[in-house]
Image (cartoon, rainbow, N blue to C red):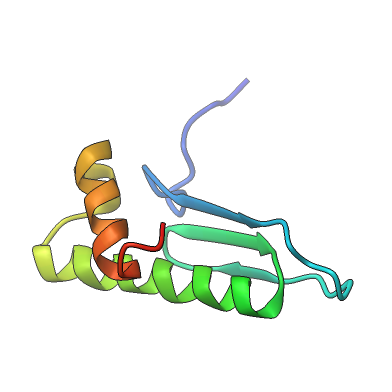
Length: 85
């Protein structure tokens, strides 16, 4: 069995799951290192904005998601979301 990582698979990624969907609409958004599913329109939009801002901040710092510690990631999430995580 070949378990080698595919070149397009990132070393680390963000998975977001929204659980407040009441309208039955299926929302899925994929990005460079994130995959977001579910949620109300508002929740899904907020998850998407947060993931994009995380990527922008990582790029500004010259880092990849796989290069940040869990603590640094938590701080980064708080920074880009205005402390709403």
